[in-house]
Length: 308
Image (cartoon, one colour):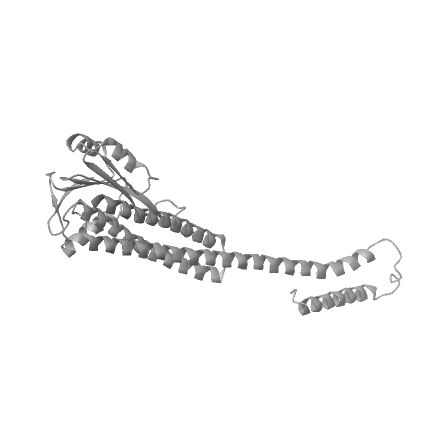
């Protein structure tokens, strides 16, 4: 899907392409590739780099084109992880700005709506790239808040009963935090490269750059805090599970020993040999009571040493 937007007190969508516009492309098809490579003369290697789901945040240049790749968060459709990060490429020159993403995300529509609502003016390609990075940091923080709520919910469920599903849920969230940590760190390093590229061009907005750095640092600190909390929580519940297993095994062993005593006595008196009680009419009752008394003594002793 391809849209043409102009930087005029926010973004205004136009029906067709004109110079000095932003071309936003999500999930590009063959027509979009043809438009980019033939009409705009965008290097095909840039599009191949953006298509790589494992591409790290970086910059590249070819001729008068500048490629900036950063990673943004999105909700995952895969059951093994709730959130993932994906690359988005911003391809710019002096006359056109192109953003290419091979997934549909909430970030770009929200970025456009926010810019319209706040009447944000994008003066140049440096402003545009920095504001996209700023928006990515905001969405990282939004998803981190959701992750924190999910961790709290999982902790409450684990307090009631420890199930494998709840622990697996925490493991998935921990995997997401690892993805977020790596991507945010990469975006932070990208800021330094962009600063070197634009510092002598007159494009760089120092105040905007500082805001982006602060927002990314906040996201990075937040993901580290949540990651440490989640790691501690999982370690604590792993210890609880181990202790519960030990307690269950201890009770089962104590119960086995308690039941073994009457079983042992019954085995002796079930032998086909003379045991001097076969002539007594109340021998069976005596043996049963004696076995029960011994079991009771063992049970009381185990309770005293807290094995039951």
